[in-house]
Length: 131
Image 1 (cartoon, rainbow, N blue to C red):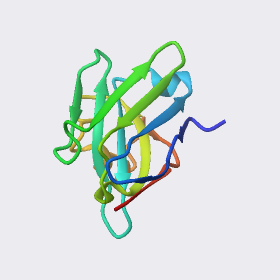
Image 2: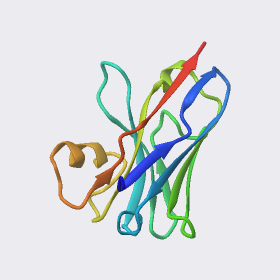
Image 3: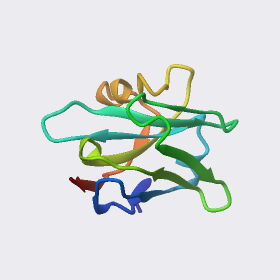
Image 4: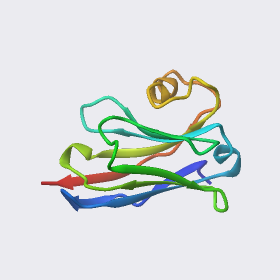
């Protein structure tokens, strides 16, 4: 069983919406922070949204006002509601979970690249937005 598994990706036209889901095992879900990052072809990974244990959220400037991160503790599921999508949102979207004050929207992908212990992430789901 994967520790975190994303679903909900697909192909949409610009202006459309998608809702991504991430099913997490309990020990991955019960972390200080959970988030989403994405990687487009030929580009570096980019942190998109983070939600903390207390429910506070943060977003990258590129998605602020369009994306909403949420979680459901009854099912250990993380969500990303994506509205008003544009072609620049085309990427593979991954969910991640980790602990510690240095797990932020800006550092999440760096910690993963560095192989920081105690961080989990999924294989990703493809989102394609056409103009």
